[in-house]
Length: 76
Length: 140
Image 1 (cartoon, each protein chain N blue to C red):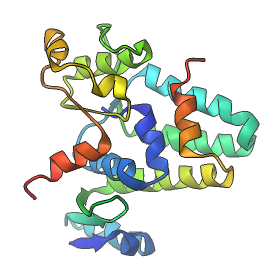
Image 2 (image 1 turned 180 degrees about the vertical axis):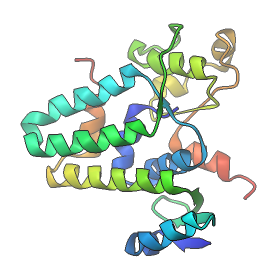
Image 3 (image 1 turned 60 degrees about the horizontal axis):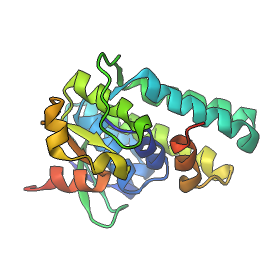
């Protein structure tokens, strides 16, 4: 089963059902500069949603990616 | 093995997120206490910027994400990286006999293969998330 990222975001429940039925799901992502085929399982979908929720918090707070990476890389 | 900056960068989407969700779906992911500490440092620094409630929520989410990885305690200290704070990643890679270390950090990416070989890390490929995705999608 192949699914586009935007369709996956609209209907994640459908993807989870297919995975539970034992089907493999390929996520077609065009987020990056090139199109990728990413085989996903439930763990990957869970990671996706956790990262998305984390992004919302950082976005709401107006914290940039560069700022967060600088904190991670700082020695203090 | 994924370094903390790649995980944080994956929050913002793009290549890092593609790589992280691919890895969680298809590979074993490992972390160590020192990597968890990097996230704690982040949460601490966030306190003043985003408020307690958001920090609490961010902490819950990051803990859940890190729980999906297997925690290991490195036995051997490796000292190859010019930024010594990054050596912790190499120590974990040695312990788990890692195939890949994903990072955006040039100090790690530029480590000479011969040096890795000398510390029995000859199998390890240190790559950016974008190079990793190119590598794994080759031939598809």
